Image 1 (cartoon, helix red, strand yellow):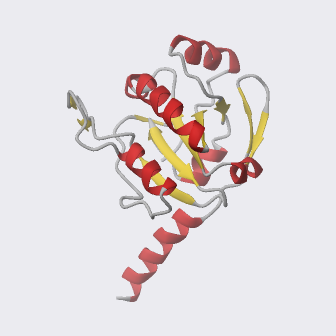
Image 2 (image 1 turned 135 degrees about the vertical axis):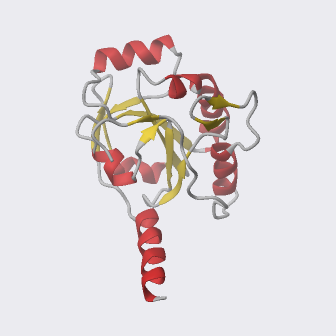
Amino acid sequence: MRGGAALICLAVACLAAAPEFALQDSNGTAHTQAELSRHKATVFIFVATDCPNSNTYAPVLARLYRQYSPRGVAFFNVYSDPQETAATVRKHDSDFQVPYPALLDPHQTLARETGARSTPEVVILGPDGKQLYRGRVDDRFVDFGKTRYQPTRNDLRDALDQILQGKPVVHPVTQVLGCAIPGIS
């Protein structure tokens, strides 16, 4: 029983740890964990320019940004592939009409600190830096090569609604089906 309790505590501690980061966006502006306190929640979307799953979500995430940013939620794309450059990220975000900043995470600092392993994977942090949600945008991707026409669960939207209502996220971790972040296991 002790081992099981230790695993639960370890999982809770992983969700509660506040990440430390100092990253530049694709335009050269520096961003740090100090910015988290300015927002009710901060959404980090781990993406890759060559991941079809993450590219599929660009319009959905842009709509969520337009809906939730006026309510105090910040959004950032996070590129944790060391091969991505500011120029390729700017082009990618322009091509996909991404309306929020893109952070370059070439040393995978934010990915490792938050536990992100795949793209598209979403991590929501509270103003204190504690992780409130990590997982998928929705359940559109059922399995590799198998998708739903419409999702049956909108995990990111549900998590944001619960956070903004001052409630705990019902499902704080969900499974992501997507592209692996290179070098992270």
